[in-house]
Length: 323
Picture (cartoon, rainbow, N blue to C red):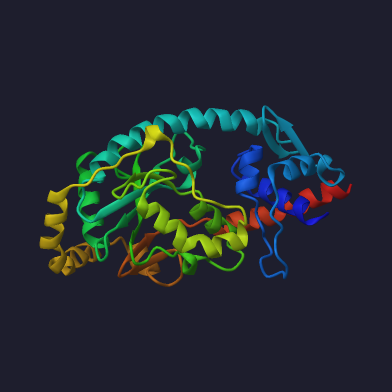
């Protein structure tokens, strides 16, 4: 197999784990380089080259297409799965926008990004609405405290009765800690790479027009170099106009100046109520991080399982291409 065939196959195999067939444009954007330690540059492939390669002799035996989606042989059913989940994700996005409008008024909050399955419209009925919050410098503790209080008041936190459309706020980062490269589990952590690349901006207090707001652009600039080692064609997403939430509150800014000197209070209160699992895992590895400017609470981290599943499926796909 040539280089492009390997890249295409690895991309389709990775998203096959999540029952997610890809369009031609998505394959181009998410073209996945697994072995980044290999020397040599990745050629800049265009859509026409990728389209031709998808029907090449090297991939013809292992890849199928239907309704504009490409997927591995024998996985035809995931086309219907993707279409079904898109409808579910649309409903969750509508729900998320209402909550994001409220959360956007929280002191120190500068941008709110969708992540995990909702970010690329692949949610199940019981999927949470996962959000990443970018804050003003030094504001992660206050932003988290007020956000959790609001969600608790509306019974929207995971575990608060029912299991549908809960809002999961497991990552808070401030504007000085936007580079997430150190949170990779290992150089082979392709799960984390795709997780970051698929962040979708819902709110940005600094809207600059075009692609998305200023904080999302800054986030992408901070992570662009290391992401492109894995995803050479990756670019920031183009935000749909119906999903844009933007405003600036001067009252919020004044409130922040008052609160900032008392950040230690917000930090101490929350640390006292950390669950046992978070206390045990905090800063032991990249799953749970509790630092100034960065709060990440992924207790149920499945990156290792996804990597093992990817290796197994990729090996089977390679065998299929050579048979």
